[in-house]
Amino acid sequence: MFVCICHHVREREVRAVIRAGAHTEESVGDACGAGTGCGSCLDRICDLIEEETADTRLPLVA
Image 1 (spheres, rainbow, N blue to C red):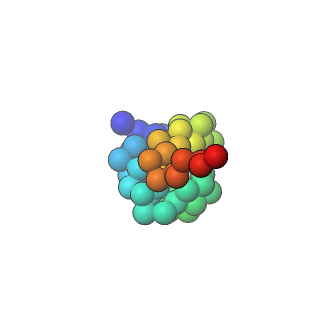
Image 2 (spheres, one colour; image 1 turned 90 degrees about the vertical axis):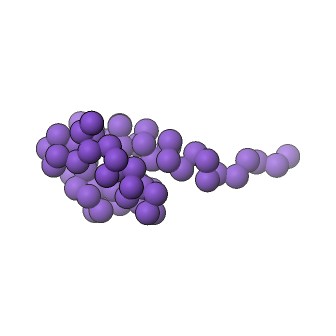
């Protein structure tokens, strides 16, 4: 499925660049172009960043 229609970037490519260290919308755009056109995909990119980085966050210890 395409995340970014403007630059024809698929979800699997966005997930791959996030796993490789792109953890902001800007760094994802730098890595693969997604989000650098009209911007309508930025919310989806943010969601993917959250999904891909959620399991790497450590729980807070009280």
